[in-house]
Length: 240
Image 1 (tube, rainbow, N blue to C red):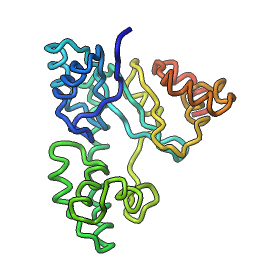
Image 2 (cartoon, rainbow, N blue to C red):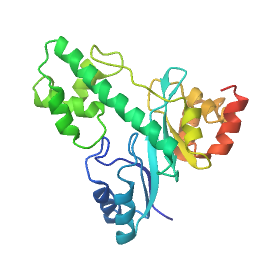
Image 3 (cartoon, rainbow, N blue to C red):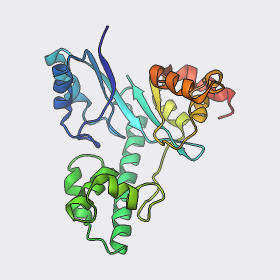
Image 4 (cartoon, one colour):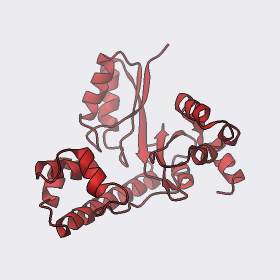
């Protein structure tokens, strides 16, 4: 049976390794297929694909959109889209620019709270990657504001925290429209979200009626991987 990982990040977003290293690590761990799905960017795909051809790992081109459904965060993992599509890249750039501005505003709130966190350091930590909250959390640890990145989220920059700033997010249908004809996976990014809502969004209302534990098992095992065409039809039926 093939060994597959369809959700990885490189240091082009909030991962640790270069795209090539992600693929090499996949080969070392005997994976046959790996998808590179960085947040709001496809910048690492060319490097990942080239490395895959060398080390014998099939690299699936992907991207993870920030999306929102009924006020809840639902990331949309997209696969086999055209990374050169102009509309796709325009939206990804808008999302990255929003993340940059969001980072500035969050650091500003931290400074208003009297905490010695510099946005210049956050940018240095992020490097060429899209600025995300873990970069801010790392800067907070370095500044001695918190002991761990987890504490940074729990006390300051997590949802509802005193330094939290809401981000721009797509409606899932708009994300699907940008990847016309390809596949996607719904990621229940907000653990507080009712699983039934995730299943309903994915068009699996039949499973939403089952006990929560069984629905969660099905959700995790099957991943809600559906074609974009099918998802659009199902979401239309739900009035979205």
